[in-house]
Length: 155
Image (cartoon, rainbow, N blue to C red):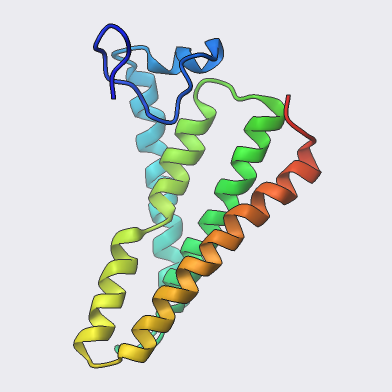
């Protein structure tokens, strides 16, 4: 997606909102640095949880369920906070893209489901897929609703 001058833009930035338009400035090394720093924090937290909540081959990968549902809840809270209070320029990239992007894991979710299928645990794989998708959807909406109650309505 590009703007009216052909520059690439972030598709979740509304260019009609002046404050969001500022997010599209080119060559923002500080932006890349906060995303990278946040990703390290998120990935380390994910690793810690995956070491704390372990599972054997062929069983439900609860750590990935907890990580993705917890990350979805936090994404909902973050978006409610931004809606209610606005955001400093680096808040969403640091927390949303960096920390929560590094924390949540679609790749592990896919590999876990594939691994369950390869050991002929089709029922567990189907349950895992349905449970994770359902919990994440409920968590993001629940986090947003809770955030709206905690932080107030839209600006």
